Image (cartoon, rainbow, N blue to C red; front, top):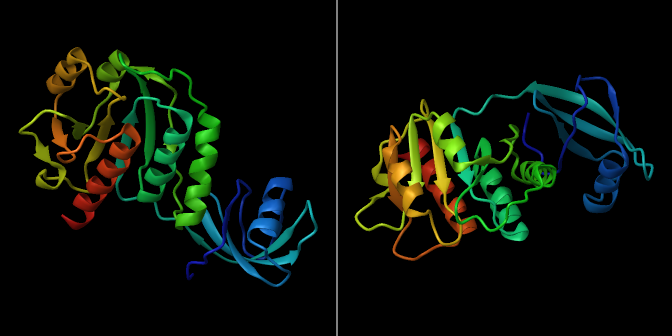
Length: 239
C-alpha cells in the first residue's frame, strides 16, 4: 500500500471492509485540519496495522470512514531509548516531537542533580508523539516510561551501548563508534548545566558506556537530544 500524506492514529481494531467512526477530536482534525471531503482517502493506523480508508461521512462530530485495504505494520528494526532530564515544557515538547520523527523507540525521563523542572506531563508528550508519527509516516509509536531518579537509572538500565553526551574534550564522535541494528542503544542527554561530577563518574563506570561529543559548540538539552538521536540513527543505518 502506497503511503498517504494524510494519516490519523486510532486505537480501534482495523479490518478491511468495515466502517470506522471517529470521535469528536479526530472528526475535528479530519474536517478542519485535513479538510477532507466525502470520497477522499486517508490512512488510518494503530499499533498493529495501517489501512487505506475512504471518507463516507464527514458529519461535524462523527465522521465515518470505510476501510478499503489493510496491511500489517512491521516492527522497528532498531531499539533506541532517549534518556533525558525534564526541561521546560516547550523545549521538551519540541525534543519529543523531533525525536519521534527521527525514530526514537522509547523515552525515559530521568531526575538528575541539576534538573530544574521536576514535573512532566507524559500524556501531553504522548499526544505530541502521536501527532509527530502521523505527520512523519511513522507507524510504530514510541513508548514513554515514568520519571525515575538518576540512581535508579544507573541500577536498572541495560543496553548493548550506552551513549552519553559529554562536554569533556577528547571524546569520540558518534559516527566513529561501531553501532548496529542488532544492539539496544541508550542515549543520555543531561540537563541545562550538564551532568554533575558525580553523575559523570557514575556514567563512565557503566558497562558498555561511551562518552561522545556533539561538536565544539555547547548545545541546549533539547538540541542535543535531537542531534544525538539523528546521528545514532544515521550511524546504524548508513554507517
